[in-house]
Image (cartoon, rainbow, N blue to C red; front, side, top):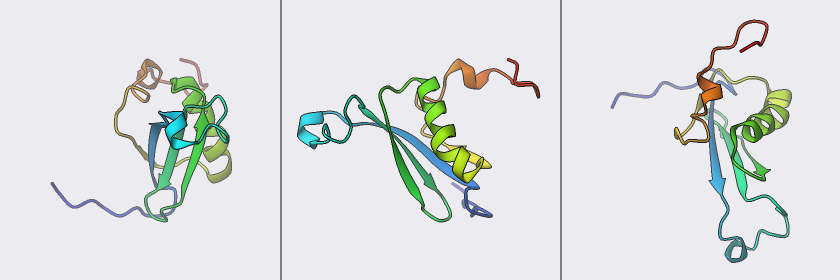
Amino acid sequence: RGLRSSPLFPQYTLYVYVLSVYPRKKLRIHHWLPGNTYILTLQDDLTKYSMGIALPNHQFNTIAEAFVTNFVCTHGIPQTILTDQSTDFLSKILNEPISPTNQR
């Protein structure tokens, strides 16, 4: 394993994970997450700024919409996004090239 380089500026490297919040009764979260059973977590590598976004499911479209709406629109697009390579992020949508006109 080599040394990991430091990020150059805030929002350069972003860690993204989707967490399941089961069992709901044991964690006593049902009062603040009605209908949501997943949390999208985001953490900036340089500043350690973190945020969690409640999600009703862990489908790619739901994750992408929450990410763009809650992070990209306020903080900008990160240079690098690191995930644990779960199936949430290995959707076929990610593997399709997008042209400059946003057509697949």
